[in-house]
Length: 285
Ligand code: FE
Ligand code: FE
Ligand code: ZN
Image 1 (tube, rainbow, N blue to C red):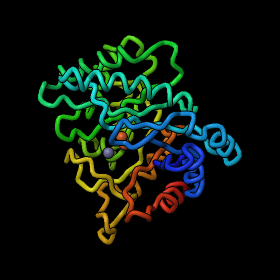
Image 2 (cartoon, rainbow, N blue to C red; image 1 turned 90 degrees about the vertical axis):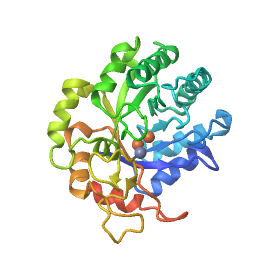
Image 3 (spheres, protein in one colour; image 1 turned 90 degrees about the horizontal axis):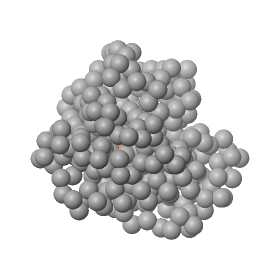
């Protein structure tokens, strides 16, 4: 099982990220190449990549994932926003390759009023500008909760995008448990059926990254607020509506085998997270 969490690159870049992941008992991790909310990025040469890779090798860490910043919106009807997204994603793919990661997770985009079909076509157009047959990194389209005008909250959206992208051999899918639950899929009682549908609509070979999170809201709420794994009412961040049993079932499922499973669960305060405990809980048979 490949289990880890989102970690920070503050300080010594990849080396700091790897050390943080190791402290949680993880064997994989996910990082942002800078702040998730902006496009300010340090030169890749300052990210301690060689030392980071050495540390990873020595400590059994691998199959790491990069997450693109949220501000990329390829579905935007505004040409400036769209253009910035395309340009930034191109650079981010280069950085992801330099870090030695095979996957960059992307929120496909929000149509902000232009409508779903227009937005989906725009995403495909953007990906067609970015993807090249030479790149070694896959772009992992994240399945979203459907908050606001967010797209890719249905498997059919992913299928639509795949169909319109020339180099779709460079596209895979990231399944976020909080998002698909919030989008209305019953992963609590019918995960096998949900995966059958995934296979029918997208193809299970595309599923390459998982985000393992609880949800603060009931199925179909389209809220996208992550909860700690199996958290009850006593948890200061609120109760998880998915529950430990379902999340444990998913990480031990065949579809997750050897795929990076990344926790993005809330921190209790600025200094405290539960990644170590949550990883340990999920790993148990
Ligand atoms: Fe995400
Ligand atoms: Fe996620
Ligand atoms: Zn989320």
